[in-house]
Length: 341
Length: 238
Image 1: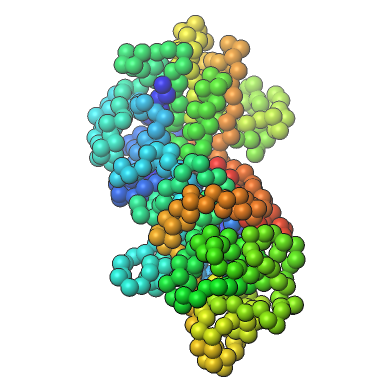
Image 2 (image 1 turned 90 degrees about the vertical axis):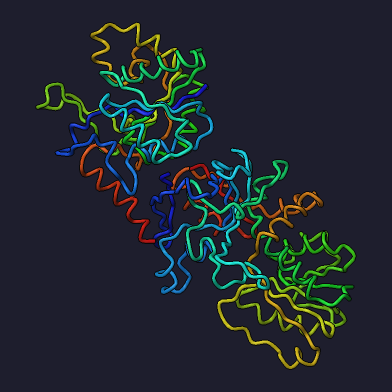
């Protein structure tokens, strides 16, 4: 079946191209309805990735966060019209030890191959996760981002030692906010501290036990473990502050992406016997767990609603540009494209 | 009930020296008509897809449908078209009437078999507004200035381009209403009214506009075929 694909061919320029979906390949065909813009999409859209990366990856359809309605399912697992979240990570092999999102052979939508900015998306049946219609689709649209936090928290649970009296999250942006919401839901008895730069944003973390400005952290603030959700140039300061305030043998979970190597105080990492681990992307199990948590903790949906920045109906390429430009100019929150192609 | 009606009646006299009608030429790996049928077949709103083609091509079309659509072929019926576009549509309505019965809400979404690049949204909106308004035409705003000439040698008028649209398909109608209006026409009127929407307009009925797409092209000339081929070929490089 001919399928319209909206590929970014150059910074700020989308063009229509077509592919042919094989209806006999056993794949499910999903019609995207809600697509969420991520920083990674913006880096391609604005052309701020290195020139050689842009040359290698474009043209490519952007967006790796989104959901849609089942249009066609030859396996009979889903009914036409069922709402499913699409999983961007696409493994090419199975490994009993290494998670699907860390296999070097795995492909990722809107990174190595076309993302969800298409009329229809054909996926293997295990690359979709059903979501109840009672969950707001605008919020479920960015489940992928949420599942990255859930993945990191699950890894924390399996790696960190059992003393979890206090945990700190550095970063007051979307990722820090989401990680904090889910950490509190999954570990309600742990004291949760948020450390950031923007007082207004910090005031939104009403469910946390306390918030602090990174320029004024009390000397006697100690945490057992920490999550770094900062990324970029500020990663260095955040990680080194964590090293200063963390108790011996604590774990530091790094989630923030930085384009450059980050110098850290390894002497103190050694002296305190710290464990530093990275988390990136997520797999099917993390999506399932996330949807389960949506149902178990309905208050989560309310908190997530606070970070929906803008909703833009998209019927044309002009609308696509409008959505990305709107996203650039917002101060915080997610931009959701109400996709009608 | 909603029916998809794929119009493949044309012989393709504008296509140059090709042996097959244009809808049977391949674009990518499949005949154009199969691409078009596939866009409709995945839509669960349709009770049946009715494909109408020239008599000599009925058997061939059935074979193509079986070959390319496999199990889904049972959703398609291939019939002989009529002497004109409207007669072809009437054949589909007669089939619906005899097999399913015709009531005031029976809807037909008619589409050119040589427009394989239509989108799900266009089909969806045709159905939605077809149910609501009874008659729908798919159009895009005119980009070229339209010039009217009565005799073909000098301009008679230049209509305001901002009010001009180019007609595409699908065109969607309440089938019983279309049949009643068509049967009320004289033979001379039937000869002139080659477009089903025009029957509604001339009889004072409203036809709702659905926004088409520039790329929802009609593969009419060899040039179009090359454009269509290049649109698909480009993605193969990826």
